[in-house]
Length: 389
Image (tube, rainbow, N blue to C red; front, side):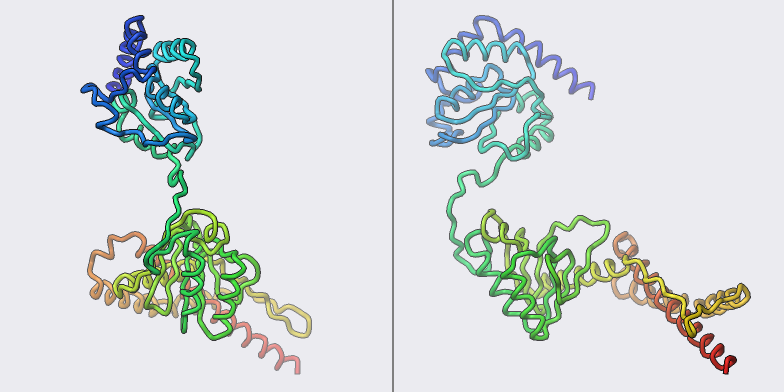
């Protein structure tokens, strides 16, 4: 941190020195495009075409702009430019150039490692010297990526393979066909399924006997099993069909992501890949199910009156449950030993697997206890009814 702060101070000192009249003259020459070159070797743009041929109408930002001569090139080419630099003296020189040549664009005093501009705001992000020399490369490059707006030209693309799913090109057609081809099962990860056409197909498949499980959410009423993965932000969009083929991509089954936004996905049928996806889904499904709060059983009633359970009866029930759970614990230990022997001891170091195992066992024990409580209460109700007779 001390070294970085020292570099920043040095950058300001160098910037202040370069802002004298001699530097202004050199900056003016560059801004006029009389000498449009790159780097310390002065390689011409014609030999090193860093900038695209047509920049008219693009939103551009220069990080560590100095006197902003690169920004001046962009502005003269028709781009909408924002220039950013940490050194005030450099920006003062840039303003003198703007006034001299009547070429104006925003100048922002800020660090290239933390730019006060919104995500995905620019079609072109450039740094010739400033940020690339004086900023932490991991930080400023990450910041440049944050500012960059991908697919800015919205070039039309027609996929050449049906297994390459591109929105808005072939996404709707490909995914409709993929869903309609399901014969036995669909396992789906999707944060929010809301497209009417896709929902209609899913309902049709469900009526035809296809088992449908969805981790995520569904708009409207669903005729299939839907669960949320508690505590986890669901990002993946995945559809596994009949345990043989799978779609993995960025398209949710929503109209915007199918028909408007540029999204990508692949349909795969590699057996090992699909098997891994199925295993992951089933593990997540168990985790989601185990995370649900158990239903609180209502006290049984006899002829409209609740049955009271004495403290003595409750203590007896606890003793019975404790005694019955001992063999369950032994069985669980044996099952875990077999699983580890089969999968290898590395699974013991996987926190996700251990967490899932705990939740599965906990859920199973809860179900067993609920059934035992239900049986005990039914027996108690039967005894009470016999006494009344």
